[in-house]
Image (cartoon, rainbow, N blue to C red):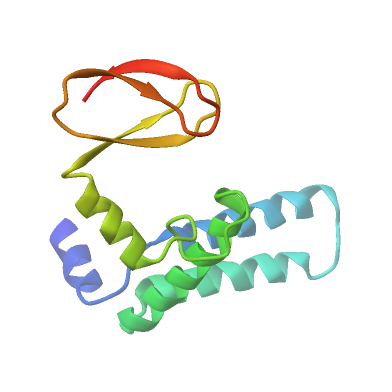
Length: 142
């Protein structure tokens, strides 16, 4: 039975964060409809569920992936404190790549007083780090 389902789903998009969001919204609309009888509200929930299953069973994976990326980019504004960029906190791919490369050379710490990110060279042993923003000193091993 499981092999049949796997064979059926082969080449189809499947579930993602956008589908999960649509399912939760449809469930919330159905629960609201239980308490507040608004005509045709259940039809809206049914339309959301149909859209969810359409996306899940779609074979056009590139379009579904692009829809999910747009959704993630949109909700990142609310999750990351107002950044307007992509899903990774508003930083471009080049900036993220540069920081990944720098992690080989530098070690990053967070100031215990002001939460400023502080970069120090790796391999220097136990050193005293002074935050450039608030001038708090703390000792860490690099």
